[in-house]
Amino acid sequence: MKKAIITGGSSFHQNFFINKDAKYSNFYDEKIYLANLKDKDLSEFDLVVFASRMYPKFMRENFEKILNYLKNDGNVLMFPDLISGLFNHITYETGQVNFWWWISQNADLPMYKANENSTLWNFLEVKECKWHYHGTFKHGGEVEKLLVDELGRSILCKDEKTFKGSLYLSALDPDFHLGQGFMPITEVFFDKFMKWLEFDINSKEK
Image 1 (cartoon, rainbow, N blue to C red):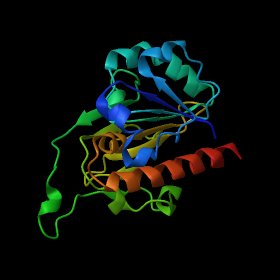
Image 2 (image 1 turned 135 degrees about the vertical axis):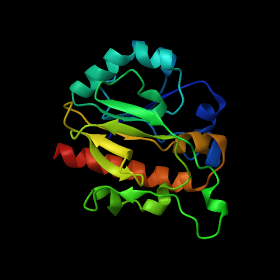
Image 3 (image 1 turned 180 degrees about the vertical axis):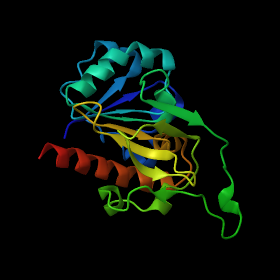
């Protein structure tokens, strides 16, 4: 599978490839700077990942390119702060963040499997998704819920009906924390989630 990451110029974007003894320096086949995306043909890639917290103006400028890639069997992973103004059928709603839930004995961050039978749970455990999240996705029934909060709102979800390709959305931001160098569970989540993502895409192609 050929993978690309669209990344920005912030320190955490760059440090993602340097931290952890450069574990992720060659994880993707190509790194594309967001400002240069307009000149790049994405059709050669099976999966395009958009790094967290990038400049919204450049994201909106490339909307048609992203849409055409999805319509032509491309697969995309996006983080919540990137989708504003891009899709009509999915919105992101910010919420109050519980950063410190874990300091109280026996405390928990409410997260649940939306579908026990999803293949995601062959790769990942719910406890490996728990650090914090900044909001949830609102969408219709064409989008599959994978991980939800206590009100049934999507934290992880997948849309394989709207486009020929699949759109994966995560309200969790592991790449940001890996770039910043804190929150160790994000490494576990990222590694396992990406393995599932590749499995899910390859399964669809069979």
